[in-house]
Amino acid sequence: MNTIDVALICKSLSEANRLQIIDMLADGERCACELLDNFEISQSTLSYHMRMLIDSGLVETRKDGKWSHYRINCATLNAFKKFVNDLSCTPNVGEHSCE
Image 1 (tube, rainbow, N blue to C red):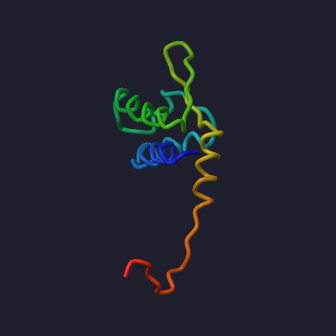
Image 2: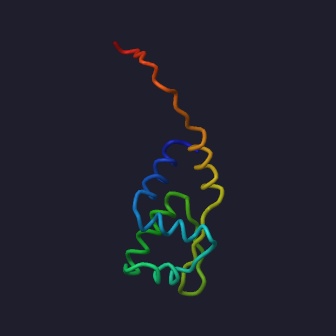
C-alpha cells in the first residue's frame, strides 16, 4: 500500500460519522437504510460519507433494487493495518543530526 492510498484512508476516517459507519460495518454488510436509522443525517449526507469511504477503497458496495449494501473491503483494511503495524519509533536519545 502506498502513502497516497494510506492518506486517502486516513482522510476518510477523519470524521466521526464515517468512523461509526466503519464500526457498524465491522459486524458485516449493512443496507443504507440500516445505516440511516443510526444517524440523524439525510440520505444525501450518508451518500457523501459512503462515497468518501468507497473512494478510499475501504468500503465496497453492491446494489439490490433501490438500496445499496455496504461492506468493508477486507484486502484494503488488512493492507492499511499492515502499514500501521509496520510503523515504528526510535526513542530520541538527545542526538540531533541538524545542528
